[in-house]
Amino acid sequence: MDAKLNLKIKIVNKIEEIPQDQWDSVFPKALENYHFFRTLDESSFEQFSFRYIFVYDNDTPIGAATCFIMDFPLDISVTGPLKSFINVVKKIFPGLINPKVVVCGLPMGPGRIGMTKAPTEVMEAVNSGLEEIAGEIKAPLIFFKDFAAEYDDTLKALLRDGFTRLESLPNTEMEINFKDFDGYLKTLSSSSREGLKRNFKKVDSKIKFDLEIVDKLEGEVLSQAYELYLQTYNNHELGFEKLPLEFFKNLSKNMPKEIKYFLWRVEGKLVTFALCLVSGDYFIDYYLGFDYTVSNQYYLYFIRFRDLLKWCIDHGIKRYEMGQTSYEPKRRLRFNFIRYYLYIKHRNPLLNFLLIPISHLMKPENFDPVFKQMNRKD
Image 1: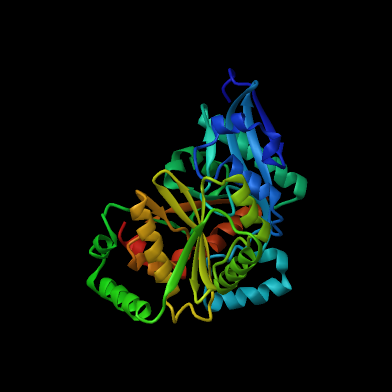
Image 2: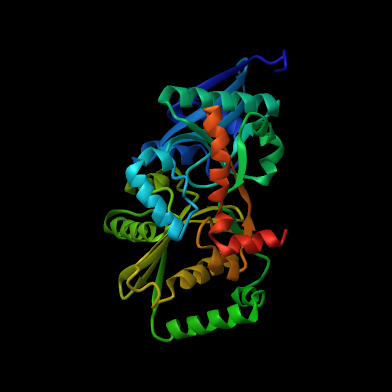
């Protein structure tokens, strides 16, 4: 380590233990910011407990990372018959497939590490902080979760320290460079374009959707939206984080300028909603919920996408992010896949050696043909 540096690590349980101006001076600018992390701390997550690692050179902040502790489902990307087999194994050996893990990153969204100088030394300090946390709670595994390729050079030192790099579930986003929704439709394949037009015509001729856009959810509307969120969470085989009700309330309180709730009703009944984050010309379609008794009948997935994209076009949005999962419809809608990578290490060297072939068996491309098509294009 550079002799000129005098590094100190501070690990805290709540983001408010670090002054906001210090955190903002180091951590990358993103919608998942200091106020977002405060929301995580104030909400009652059953799956996760959060930690924040801050690195100083003497008294000057030079590095920052978020992390969380959980029982991690190693089979998160596994589907089909193998998933059923693993569910049986979980009942017999619950700690084998869902071990306790210290994860650098976020349960939702991409991993980020802030560093203003000395990236190698900062990375070593962050990794040392993760090791310290893992030792305290006796967690056998350490992950760096969902880091984009731009972090490859920064994180390559992990490979020399025994970590294995795996492809994770990709993110999806769309560059909006068309003037209206008809212009967007022209970018699609003829089969996708005609299919959407046909479905929109079929629904719009029979059903009137009332769209309301609000900055926060309260009372009965919050309860209704949360019920739809739970339906969607329970319906997804690849579900990871489960949000508590307080998350939706606290996010509106802490980030009032960035939050938009889109609510679609039919005859007064809420049938789908979207929680979105907005900043400048950047839009994240963050969380959603469907009434699955009518979702297929009303083509709700595509109706909400149409209305959100129209809103983005009307408000000068240039980048529309739609997150992970549901890759086949996003592929047909012409979202781009943004590769994420997972770095994984077992703290026992022998078990770390054995973990490598097991983790490669659980790569997303082994279970979803969309990923295989994506990799063939490289």
